[in-house]
Length: 127
Image: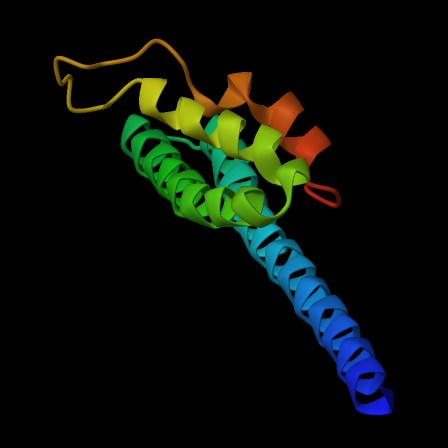
């Protein structure tokens, strides 16, 4: 009887540890995604002050790349912790961004339209 009870206590303790590890993983991934979001917003804001069209295009493209790097991280975090789902959804909107190459799937959005949502979903991100 004591062995069974000890095994039950051990199983509960291990499952609690495993669940806390999952939560930490989601939090870590979400924070990494927010780090990419922060870099993107900084680049986007720099593009607004850039002196030449080439610099604007380059900085805007770099900002978009950072947002797209954040998407798989946010998606993985959202799989483990649903509080990251709004960030994942917002980041998925980058598929609708205008493209400098004039491709047929050219969208009508830009990062500026997402900044309010991104800053709300990622604490400590510049606006």
